Length: 394
Image (tube, rainbow, N blue to C red; front, side, top):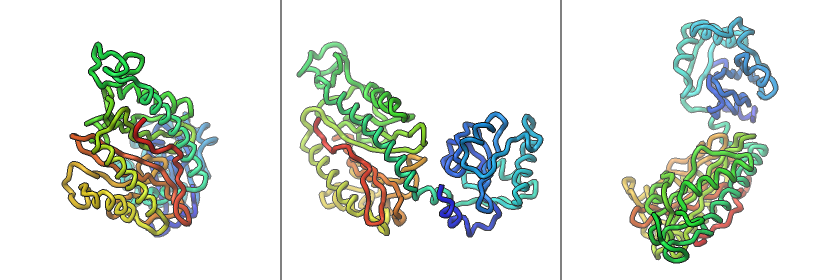
């Protein structure tokens, strides 16, 4: 955690402290406390110090793990198991014990906790700007290294997926099209190769490298025309297959993100044109990444490639359902989607921002193509954290 940056962003808040009531699933909580508590707990930042309040069950681990100046347990406030009002009394005592009479809370903080503190005379303001997210957006060298490590695991998983797809037979060409396999279906060991089977290969590769994910995207054919369709069922030759993997390190909790599009056999002329256009859009967007450029500038660079080729984008047609129908990228860190945004209205880029660059084209009648790298903004441009090759036909 960068405390100097934290102090800078919280300096003009008209409260004595900043309070979070959440579990580790909230990235702001994990960032501020450094503690992987599975149940909600309190973290208070006041006068440049971090204070954590946890249950007795988590106390020993929190003392070892949390990056806090003080760690206390419920029993320190004569509470361990009791009703809601007694718990809220404890929360108010914990806050006042640190000399704090007013706190700011994130926009998604529990309403019940905010109301309970107000009832006990503690002022509560909502941080509508979610300033901790702004703080988290600029990564330290250690955070960049954590993302880089997750990306290496990501690339191993992508390699496993590509090898499985590339090694498939094609029903009716390399193998008999019997059973449920229609001609053109990809086969693995005589059985249809499905999105689910490729996803399984990805998950196993990630687990072996200390990473995991809740879901991934392996979508072929018309399914690939929906950017967030996870994909299901048999994959086919001569169609684009989008593989988008966004794993999280079990150790550091930092994410990575990468997309490649593959095709077994001969893609249609349109798909080939789309792939070449998307690779050019990726290069144009990457060329625009530098400190001081905005997320809107980077998005515009990708859009212009597509628009010059006559493809619709949200810039030219906000209601289009085909073409380039999403932003060019987003920040990555403790959340897989966080600030900054590479989109219309996107903010200025700063050194330390880790962002994806992921242009794509989509149409159910054609399929979908997307290519995504993850990069870190540097003092004079960017460093691409992605080492995986860009190839369409496998």
